[in-house]
Image (tube, rainbow, N blue to C red):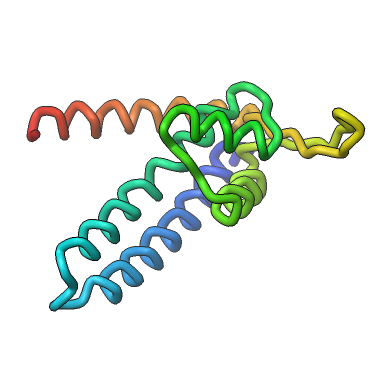
Length: 141
């Protein structure tokens, strides 16, 4: 089994665990009696969470370090907290989708991230899936 297939298998397993965990948490927090504002916020966050991986991968087609990545995402309407971004970067790197390296810039060490070869392949696949979902939803809305 090649590197891409192994990473995809591992990614699917981790993504499934991630999805189950967040669905269970979502159901737990969306108990009967929750007001509409809370319900909307929970559902909005769930929808946004699913989009962040794709947004980060898209932005990392060009190399960034953490701060510039956060700024790029925020400038494009996908603001992300540091406490969410850095664990996500570590998770994507552990799946082999990103490569990083420490370099000195402006007299400070900074960790630069970019898509790996597997990351580029997964990004293409996710984009195809995103476009299919978008087409389906646009037909329903």
